[in-house]
Amino acid sequence: MGLDSRECTPQMLRVTMHLAAEARSYERAEALMQHVLGHCLSAKTIERLVKQIGPELAARQQTERNEKQVVEADVAVVSCDGGRIHTRETGHGPGVHGARWRETKNASFERMTAANAGDEDPCPALPQTFRDLAHVAKIAEKPAFQCATGTAESVHYVGPKRILRTCISSLVTSEAFGLQMKREAQRREFPEAQRRVFIGDGLPWNWSIQREHFAKFTPILDFIHAVQYLYSAAESWEPDDKRRWARYLELTEDVWQGRVDEVIERLRSELATREVASAEELTADSPHAPLATAARYLDNNRERMDYPRYRREGLPITSAPMESLIKQINLRVKGTEMSWNDPQGAEAILQLRSASLCEDGRLDDYLRQRPGYRWARRSTPATAA
Image 1 (cartoon, rainbow, N blue to C red):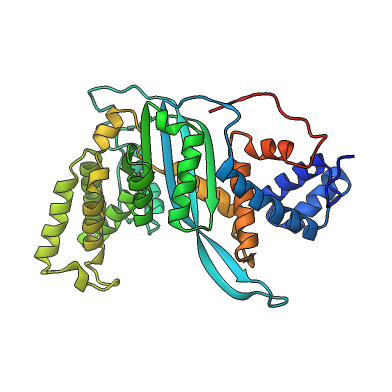
Image 2 (cartoon, helix red, strand yellow; image 1 turned 180 degrees about the vertical axis):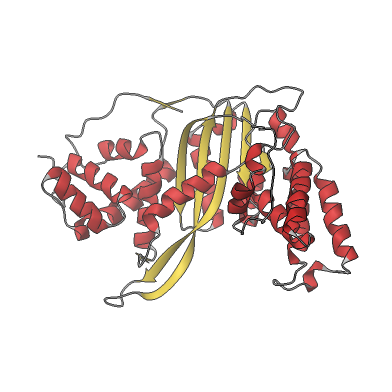
């Protein structure tokens, strides 16, 4: 019957791994199997299988040769960001012992269609999405200014569209994760793409990885993160909400149009007016801190903020898909009273979840070709983007 050492057929293993990757818990995966198949594996058995498959997937990333025909991307986009997972120490009996939050490393690899490149900026005006007060406040994770915003002409920016995404996630160090990202990009043949982009926020480890492994990719600071700092700066700058909103629009329009240096100088000038000699002297709760933080953030990333050029070249300028990916990963690994064994259980579920979110079918490919399943049929050659 093709049973493995856990008396699980290849098809049962496939179903089990997909359920374990999607369901909120191993117990929910067990219940779903019972409802859908009429029989099931226990939650403990599902967990043991995940701890077996997860490391196998991780090992395969290091040695895998791409057996599919890869379509060279018109625009190859790499992005990465950190997440959080709650872990516990093992070997201490029932209950949660040594509980702590650990940072996850997550990366997205998107093949995109090519937007038409040209000499003119396809969207010189700030798009409506960054003029909507409620939406901007949500981005900034702050209360919305209490003021009438009026109606502006609707402006939309249409950048390149995603065709296919793969992703990876792990608890390893940023150095090790950078090598994983490099291997995944090579597997997708991203270095051969016509246009190559690396998008990130201001985290230093993002740009360390970019400089070491993706030096020939155009580095772009996610515009949405710039919006967060500009909204906070406007809130600190002005005394009332109406003027705060006007200040936000002014600053953000200038950054959108590439006048980053001017915005930095205006922020510094305002700090000088307030007689703030050194940003390092400010405490986190100082009313001047958002201005100093925004000036420092823009200054550190100004070389990655030439947004008019990026739009002319048909490149993406936000990491919204990366933020969405982290939410998708968190949907499985974060939750009330959810703690993972550190590191085995946490790393295994990250490997399984990220493989299940890849749009090239890699989880199914691996399970069909997994050693030990002599009756498992191999898939015919397919095309991966």
